[in-house]
Image (cartoon, rainbow, N blue to C red; front, side, top):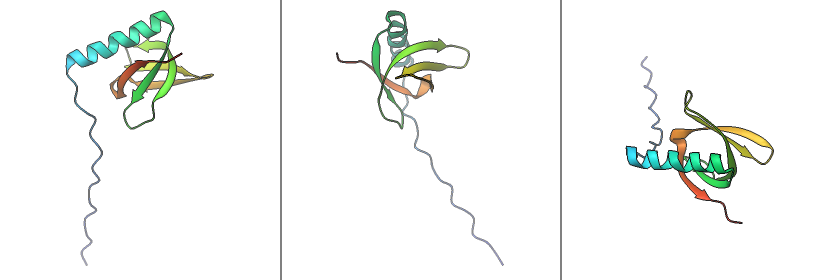
Length: 87
C-alpha cells in the first residue's frame, strides 16, 4: 500500500528590498528612538502598530517597541514602513 506524499505548503515570501531602502528604514527608526516620538510601524503580515521605539538591538536585529504599557520585540526585517503618528 502506497501513501500519497503530503503537499508542501508555500509560505508567502517577504518582499525584497535593496540596501538603500533598509538603510532609510534604519535611519527613521534611529530618529524615532532618539527623539522619543510615536510612530506607526507597518509590519509584514501584521497590523500597523502605533508605538514608541524603546531599544534597537543590533546583536539580535530586533526592535523593541512600546505599545501602550506593553513592550514587544519585532524583527527589523519584518518592518515594512515607518510613518509619523498623527497628533
